[in-house]
Amino acid sequence: MISAETKFRAAGRVGSPLVRALLGTVRTEITGDEELERFRRDGQPVIFALWHGQLLPLTHHHRDQGVTALVSEHADGEYITRIIMRLGFTAARGSSTRGGTAGLRGLLRAARAGRDLAITADGPRGPRHDFKPGALIAAKLTGYPIIPVACSASRAWVFNSWDRFILPKPFSRLKIAYGEAVLVDRKSSDEELERLAARLAETLVDLVPPLPDEDA
Image (cartoon, rainbow, N blue to C red; front, side, top):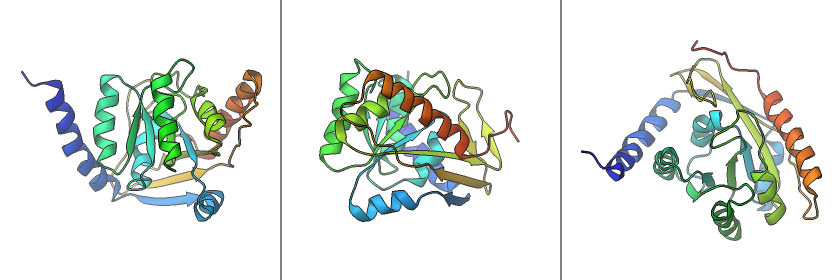
């Protein structure tokens, strides 16, 4: 019987080269990254907020940049961790929602080291496009600006999963769009955070055209 650890190691060793090879054929168009580039020049780390279903192409785009991603402690999160670590990420394991202290501690340690952070706003279990408070709490504690980022592909496999996980097809066109940065005041109330969550969810949905519901 194959152990879980063997499966996890295999996922990293096989998955990351496959991701690099497949998405290396994709033509990418970038829009709205002027503010992000300004933060880069100023040495200001950011929090990337994205939908879980768009994780793979966006991870590939930001590969080898030392970003720390929040990843669930579930078994599927371990597979993701092994792959993204070989794509140049580090991982903070756990949840960033209220009560998810392990995930937040990991993010805060990465922030103290000056790393960018990445949080799937509706992950790890959904519902799809339900912007949870994790990114906002992290921004409130770190002072980092939140950069919403979304993508769509001209041709993609769309998985039959809660997040409609996408895998761009070889030689497809990928559009990646960044939204306006959002700053969270340390004194923000729960009601203010809820309004910001709704605003960011709307931004992420509107940044790129919707993907097809089925494999194209």
